[in-house]
Image (cartoon, rainbow, N blue to C red; front, side):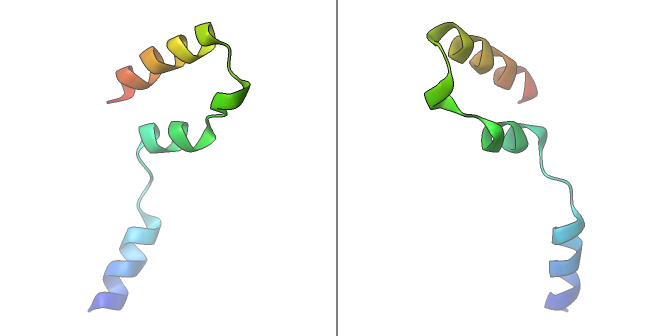
Length: 45
């Protein structure tokens, strides 16, 4: 029973917001880029 759930969860697609957050490199962003990114992420919610 639990094994089947694990398989289904692995195949489920990640929410676009989580994917975008994982790809962020905040230390490499200018303040303007950071602000634009925040607005872009807000639209994904």
